[in-house]
Image (cartoon, rainbow, N blue to C red; front, side, top):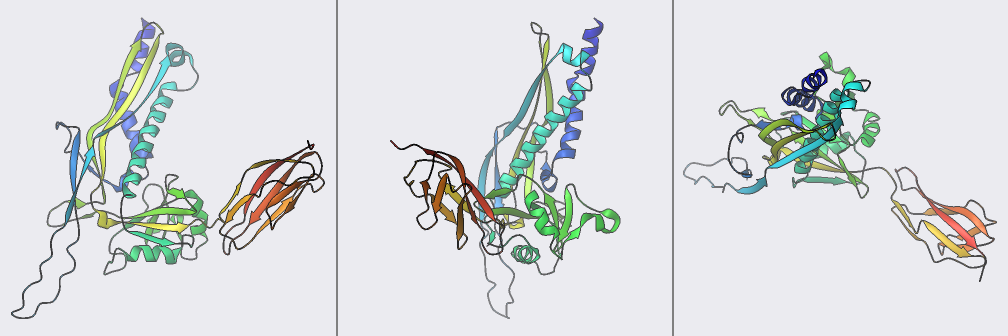
Length: 369
């Protein structure tokens, strides 16, 4: 009886819901820059429609007796299906009552991390639906960020606060920029969650979820919501519509003396003001190099088929680690078997202003027929 009482005290869904919700709020990186809307709570339906309005343009000067020019208010409607993000963990009585440490606390932390990462993924996925993109082959820098920020077309520099999500691999590039301001040098140490510095007045937040593909990083810059003095509302780039807050349920499996703990959160993440988002597409600073195949088998005294080598560098090198086993011909991109054995062929290339790229090809030389 005592053990059952202790189990029920330790695995309390109501208490765990509050704990996990608090941990979720502490762990999210991208979601804090979204507006939270709870109007869906208690409402019927599994979908909702969000209206996005386009900008009508700046006002113009009109002379006496002239007609005022008219601009159509353009709007698009996007239908979203309410999603349920969920995760579960089973735990045995022995693990709860006999294990060292705090297994229930660890489950809370990991379930919360799972929900937080899913919410962050959803926020960034929605930011990537924005259509304004600034493209450069250069790595991220002060000048590049200024070019991205200028697409907001603000009249005054720093008119609104902005945050930019950067990949951890870009942090070193930014820290070496003379215009970078480290967070530890802020006056009064004022910063937002996950912020590691500023550049061109833009807050920098590191996230592994920033898209990196095809030799480019895709960095969203988001204009943060500001209070509207007339409507007393906040217009935000991203809005998270909460259908149901973090919910924990448990199910007892008496035959195995285990308890299944599940958590879910129901919400919609929507891009509600596309004018507040610009995507900076920056080069990653790494030389692009692909070599195929990665393994080659060639008979002694014969040549292999030509390797396929693609690079953005103007030239490349091709060397054999053991020329007594296999030799290479750069012009033909072929490998010649010299003697039976194994060796490695290394292909290297370096584009201007980029780091060197290296690829290895494993070579096996066999006896001829």
